[in-house]
Image 1 (cartoon, rainbow, N blue to C red):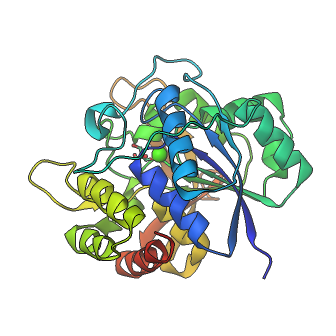
Image 2 (cartoon, helix red, strand yellow):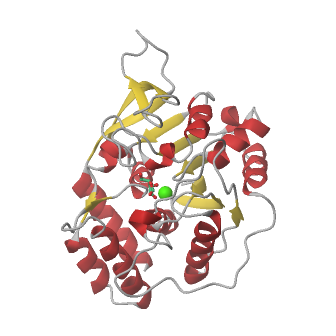
Length: 309
Ligand code: BDR
Ligand code: CA
C-alpha cells in the first residue's frame, strides 16, 4: 500500500505532540514535513517543543519555523491553560534539544512541497491557520493542488476560547476565513466531535505500564493534560482526532456544510458558522465531522502509542 503523504502544520502543545506521534506510529502515513506556527505559545516556544519532540524520537522529518503572529489581530496563546511551555507535566519534561530548524521559511517550504507533489499531499493543520493562509496568499493555485486539507478547529456548537469560538480559529480568524473561502478541499474536525474522544486515567495507566523512558515521560505529560480542568481527570482529545479519521474514516460521521468564519460579531468573533442546508441555502465548502466512535479511537491510539513509545 502506498503511504499517505502528510504535511503537518502545528503549534505544539501536548495534543499536537500526540497527533504527531500517532502519525509517526502508522506505517500507512509518511510525514514529509512539519511547519510550526505560533498558537498554544509564542513561536519560539512552539518551535522549541517541535525540535525537542523530533530530537527525542530521532525523527528525520524537516521542521520549519513559520509565522510568529496572526494576520491582523493581537496574538493570543493558550499558556494560561497549558502552562508557559504549553507542555504541562506531572513530572518529567521534554529534554532540551540543540537542533536548529530546517533552513527556510515554513510557508515557502509548504508551497514548494505541494507544488512538487500536486494532488498528493494531505495538509493536516492543527494550529491557528496563519501559515496556511500565508501560503494561499503567496501561491493562489495551492488550494487546488492539495489532496486534502484536514483541519482541527472550529465547532458546530460550544467554543472553548469564547462561548462559540474554538482556539485555533479565535487565534487568527482572518487566516481561517481566507482558508475556508479558498476552495481547498476542507475536512473540519471541531470541538463538537473532538469532545466525543476522551482521554482519562485508565489511558494514562496503560501508557505508564509501557515502562520505557519515553512511555514514562509521555505518561507524565498525558496525566497533566487529563488534569487541566480543576477537579476533573478526563479531557477531550483535539489534535489526535483528525489523525484517527485519516487512519479509519469509518469511525466518523461527516456532513457537508458551508462554513463561514465570523469576523465582526461582538460576542461571536472567531465562530465557525455552519450552514448544513446545502446545497439548498448555500454551497458547501467543507466536510464537517459530527460523530466519532470515541472508544474505538482510544483503543487504536493506545495501541499505536505503546508500539512507538
Ligand atoms: C486546539 O487548541 C489548542 O490548544 C490545541 O492544541 C488544539 O489544536 C483545541 O481548541
Ligand atoms: Ca494544536
